[in-house]
Amino acid sequence: MDRETVEPQVEALPGERAQRWVDFHHEFAAPSTYVYEFVWDTSREAIGPFCTDVDGNVLLDFTSHVAAAPLGYNNPVVREKLEEFDLVDPLKIAGQDFYVSTDGAEPPADAELPGPSQLMDRLVAATDHYDMDRVFLSNSGAEAVENGIKICYAAGGHRAFTFDGAFHGRTLGALSLNRSKTVHRRGYPEVPGVVSVPYPGSEAAYENRWLTDGPGGNVVADKLHPEQGVIDPDEVAFLILEPIQGEGGYRVAHDEFARDLEALRERYDLKVVVDEIQSGVGRTGELWAVDHLDLTPDVITAGKGLRVGATISRSDVFPEQKSRLSSTWGAGDIIASMQGALTLDVIHEQNLLSNVLERGQQLRSGLEDAIEDGDLPGAVDVRGRGLMLAVEFDTKERRDAVLEASFKRGFLTLGCGHKTLRLLPPLDVTEREIDLGLRLLQEAVADVAPNFD
Ligand SMILES: Cc1ncc(COP(=O)(O)O)c(C=O)c1O
Image 1 (tube, rainbow, N blue to C red):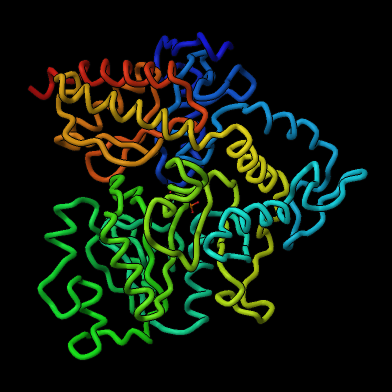
Image 2 (cartoon, protein in one colour):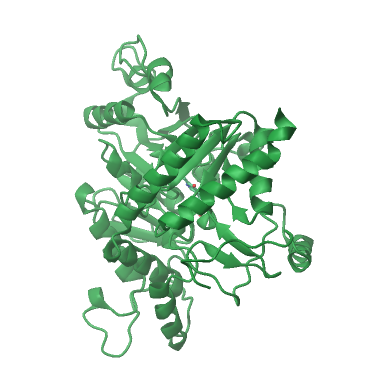
């Protein structure tokens, strides 16, 4: 497969073999968020955003496995190391390992096959500008959040702030912070003391829903106000936010809102947990989406593209006592940690942050121009940063139809919010691939337009 020339080629989706795989899966799998009737064939050709399915269809994937594969399919650097790795056994080990060694691999920081310790070393370097020096690795994004809020609770306080539209994971602690869809939370018990407030993802929302005439001047400052407030700042363990809300519909935190939070953080010594599970690891053109804002995180939670969960913070925030945090399989998967570490290396060595900014701009202007020229009927807004972009449609029905029509053309996209379509190409996506995605999206929108006239 030549990445410079390949194009999606589809006979029928899902094809006959894919359908059999999907049926088999559903015989045993509990209902979950199964996004596509798409079955990637790992034995067939795939590169960058292109892959081949079990029926031989070639697809253009702008989901990057829900941002969990930031380098797309078969990145040569990662692949080469994975091929060396069959020498190491066991591949998944119990406990927080600090041993991954091969002949002559010294010193540890330069280990040829980077493991969990090297991944943590790289994460500390990547958060040095926030004075972070400690990492706790786990198995998923939800666990990264769970441990992030635990260390804040351990430091004191039993109340917390979250934001309307938030999504932080599915474990009960993380779930208690979610405010995006009722289906996630309905009927499940909650961690007490969590207060939700509006998330200003636009100028209008900042002015109309965040700023107030109250004593503090914004909704959180009002609640914490020493005389007229209703929450004692000393009781607040943390405030958690996504710099760009993912599930909530790709809403970008307003700059002034971030500055207001920074002022509150300083005034009341609040701990700010920034959830970078979807927006981090280079997706927005900075390593962390919070780097675009004037806000200092005390804890960063990361996952997806790192292939493990990571709770990153300072030594003074993590509890000192042993056994306050732990997990049998916490970062025990050597291959996953290695992929995370190599992903960070490739982002730096191949200067992918600049590529994200350039290609993100190309995709954004392509979408905006198409809306202006009437070539994306029903599209009402383009949001996001870098290569974390989304198009909002006028109705959920149209969004769903566009998603399905894109799929039928071999173009993989994802929904988010209620009527928004997200586009998450790999971070090394090329100009030609973005043009291809734009063309396929326009064709899909045109396919369904007659049903919505
Ligand atoms: C912002 C955010 N936080 C937390 C999570 C949960 O991560 P995981 O699904 O790995 O548990 C997600 C997953 O989509 C996410 O987007």
